[in-house]
Image 1 (cartoon, rainbow, N blue to C red):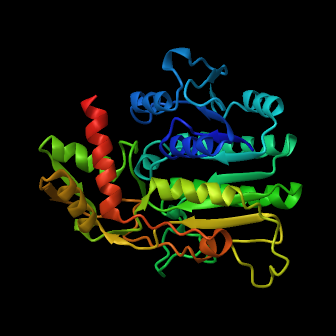
Image 2 (image 1 turned 180 degrees about the vertical axis):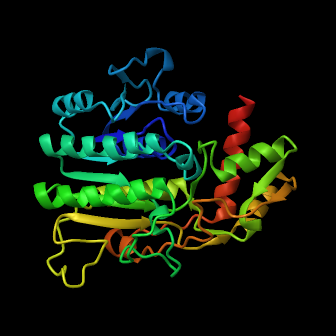
Length: 350
């Protein structure tokens, strides 16, 4: 298969590209390499996949020195003309859209970035898939769409009409936009609600990275909601294995779907939504404890109230993922955190 993966300088996109390339697929990766966080980490991910920083030019293809079937193009999803040209040239089988403006708290201070990338960029992806048909469009949604919901575990059959941040609203919008294109143009689409992804090469704005950085510098870590948080922490290797399996399963539409009692996670159209999570929530203090154990050092803790846009708990129901793909994420937090610490120490010593 020939894949387009958007966001391959990013955390999940980097790992997915490597997984598919090791399987033997052809991958074209794109990323705008914005400065939301340290671009040096993004370039380091690309270098790990054989893409030289010095060769990267806007809209020009760079071949990997590590993977024969990998090329990278610096491109912004908001640039519709460049995106259309790429689709026309490459004729992709499967598109995995992971490029997005991430971060719940950042959406409170820079909402425009979320509209440009997560809304305008995504409709450009949909239009490109319409103009140059693909077998399957898979895209990243988020567990944040569950918003004010409190019934656990979170199910794709639940109503998700009460987001608590613009980031969450943009991801819910992606699901609605995808359904429209599945209905109107018969484009098979699958949305994936990721639950608190962590692991090697992770984003510096995420909790695990912030914690280890502060602890190693002898600084205090910020523990929100006074530590009374539960998260369905999911190891990045489990996330990309889930994406790979879902991408291989193209939705055809459910003939039993009923408009009188509509299931939000499926449709009569070729449309599906899955949760990808560890389905085993962990107390934030236990997560911090796993990090302290891996580091051999205790953290100084500043206990703070819940931040605007945050939710106190997440818990994924992955029963339909298991049913349809035979896969269940299961990496224990202690194991995943230890792998992150090993990578962090190795990367920053270099």
